[in-house]
Amino acid sequence: MKTIWYNGMIYTMEIEGETVEAVVSEDDHIIETGSLATLKEKYKIARSIDLKGAMMIPGLVDSHMHLIGYGETFLKLNVSGKASKHEVLNAIYEKVKTSSPGEWIIGEGWDENLWQDKTPLSRWELDKVAPQNPIVMKRVCRHVIAVNSLAIEAANVKPQDPAPVGGVIEREENGELSGIFKDEAQNFIFSKMPSITDEYVEKALRLGIKNSWKFGLTGAHTEDLSYYETYSHAMTAFLRVLGDGSLPFKAHLLVHHKIVDEWKKDGYQFMSAIGNIEFGAMKIFVDGSLGGRTALLSKPYADDPSTQGMAIHSLSELKQLVAKARKYHMPIATHVIGDLAFENVLEVIEEFPPREGIFDRLIHAQILRPELIERAKKLPVEIDIQPGFTGSDFPWVIDRIGKQNMTYNYAWKTLIDNGLPCSGGSDAPIEPANPLLGIHAAVTREKPYDNKHQIYMPEQRLSMFEAISLYTKGSAFACGHAHDRGMIKPGFSADFTIFNQDLFSVENDDILTTSVEMTVVDGKIVYEKAKDGSPVYNHVSN
Image (tube, rainbow, N blue to C red):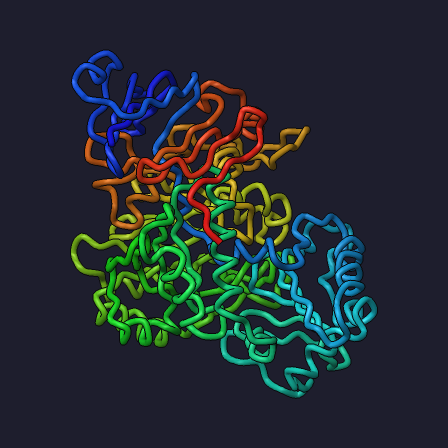
């Protein structure tokens, strides 16, 4: 069936400022672009979509999120954005009142950097609001959890127990456990939490997709396969939801190194596809987070000189993991926040480069040095950035790293100007999934809804074209689809995001009030806004 899309500001995103009057698509791909009259005369059109002056761009794709985890935020206690520790504890207390004694309560999203009291949640505070329920509260970065005494007892962790390699167990001055577990140490608690079901994971995945459509996302690069007790829980959910191709959402799955052998035994390989599932690089966590001071730095933290962060793997272990990826003919996708973590990955890629034509992915890349950027330019690497971190991490990150060390941090413009291919993601559920928040942060370098309009590192601001390109051409390049996704041109996927106003013409504050009129995947309208403003979801099954 041929469809014509017309009467809007249709940006191809091939070159800056290029628009077309109309687009003809057939089934899942674009046939031709050009003038409305010419296309109507040339083709027998079965469906006409009047954009009514709206802005149409290639479908936005989040290049780094956790799709199931994002869906879980609609099922669990979510304290994201709470402005004080009291608010967080009160939310937990309210949840406890509706829970049975002994029932585990799992929440996420707390961030002490938003509070006047900058101390993390403690075991003792959680004990007061939940004396009869094991509590696990994941920090916004998901590299730190705060738990109460019942959770510690269930996990049988003792004050004298050593932390695992790549993890931290925090203790009070008297040696007692504080309730804070970081990175690999979290597994002590996670291994004792109640079992989950395939149905739970599948429900979370469906919610993640539905709420992604609402924000104009036509697909996502997602890493979920190692977080739900067994690899099969997450894999089963993806196969049930997206495996037959009937649900229009394009999931590019990164494969965590912990489950890559099992995944390989199941017969999968890099870029193999099943329905709307496609498999990507092998994911490796190299360091932790800035919020938890576990991101690996080349210098001590300015606000805590006793630490430089933490390496999840030694350099020799990292080399072994990358060697395994190459054995499986896979690129790597590495979580690197600190500059020393970034440096270690560059060293390993220099020793074990990917196959010709394949790019490794460095995710986050927040703390850099100029010599690292020069090294990266010589390698087949793609930088997967999260522009929204600018809004959430400033100004506290300046104190954490040191003002004198900030020149090449969150340096999105510098990376692009140096010719490094970049894509844009949210890291949802760690940050909101709405790509407009990332675009706003990239263009303004401001916090959203900041009446003072404080600009952080203004020299790193991107143009609107550069910002949108991160989520269109950039995401397509990152997953090996630069040839058929990310632009509106013949032969490319009929994936479109349609906004109520032209982002290239609005004031910066108006980016945040822009709404999605329609989300289109493979020519199918999966989300649209009704005349009364209410959301309409198509192709949703439960």
